[in-house]
Length: 283
Length: 328
Image (cartoon, rainbow over all chains, first blue to last red; front, top):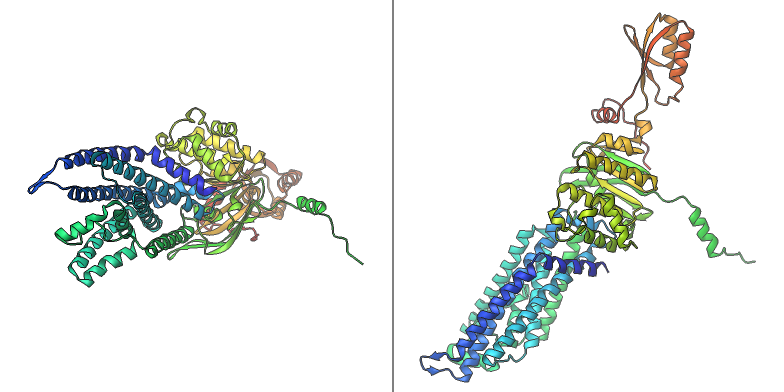
């Protein structure tokens, strides 16, 4: 009950603080630009002549993944900077005092915050991502192989990051928690790209960088799974044949169930740590 | 032979007949922040319907004590019970209203929505009209639909009072409730506390304004450097301690009579008698009657009234022994 009240309050905060409207405006601009870009793609002539349908699908897959990465970045930054002020900011400002002095468990308050932020972040990536898929479909006629899986994994990526941001915001200042979580998100993505290059070049040591970083913070692993759901199955083969692997906006393989379980365990462990830290914190 | 087991109803009657547990009971509270001891072995009780004032200089540990009572700060040692439940149980705060020293409410909500949020979190059965009355009580009726973000500090503190009162509390904890209020607002808070008292609601009041405390509190706990320096009812703390008399024709017999009532000092015509702490109120009239009987002409009798402020300063400056009550 407490969790649902706080979740509702968190969503109302996002709406009242005009976060929703800002995101909506940004997304509409991004969708319009991508629609315009994809429409140009149809009549694109390469040096060797008009693109074949296979080439057009490859480019569409790449661009779709690129734009989806943009959405996941917006959702990541948005939720990280919403999650930061949630705990640390409310404790600093004194807003938490009146709420926590009510007959509520702190873990229920935390669960409410988490649910509200997760609903907001997941709702955003799913709606914006779906709109983007539809734009691409109507402009160039490309429909990704597994859009639902892709969007679900994108949402899971957002949940991972907001869980991390909540943990950080229970121990450090609100601004620091936002910066650190977005920084870690970026660093993991870069490490994933470096690992992909290592794999393409046959360097196991470099490849391990990507694997380890995906275990420590599952955002990049989930992102790669999402890309795999959005891209044309033939794209990777064609890309490898043309230029070699390791390209950052194509994923080699779908996610294994073991990795999905690990991501769920990761979220549960980080959430538990946050609840423990928050329940012991003097406010 | 079997023993007859009493029915459930009489048991409930027995429980109902028991005296209600205190609104607040705390024992041996301790808290350290790093090397600094903020609260050291603090124990006190607030009875149901009683108004207890928490006094002390800055950094005495008053807010830390309040936060430990409400489970906002974890004590290093000690126990707390609120309205008969251990403070580790969130239900102990079901009927507790709290105005924090640092009062901030969701700036994107309206006062009506803030009250609604707190009513729902308290699971109290309070309707919209009762919430509106609560806002009217603190003078915010005409701002009920405005965003809290546009409120002045004083208005936010008034909203904080409404939040503390809205969920039909049995205990109200007010931490510096008038820090942002104008003189009119202070009078309002005083009247509010007196109204709570008349309705049998216990109040724990932390305030720097000693006059405020003196007017509304039944008992006072004075904290200094994290410890209870003194505590007791106002009558005990502000007991009339001496009487000054201007006398003419006072001879040895008159002085002997005065010494019988307490320690005597003389300065010209003025005689000062230190009265016993457990004075029953008849010492001074009896003394005056006897002095007149001895032929002394009594020009003036001035019972020296000690204000709470003087008493507080004396306790904090260690000018007199603290008369702390035994720990509950």
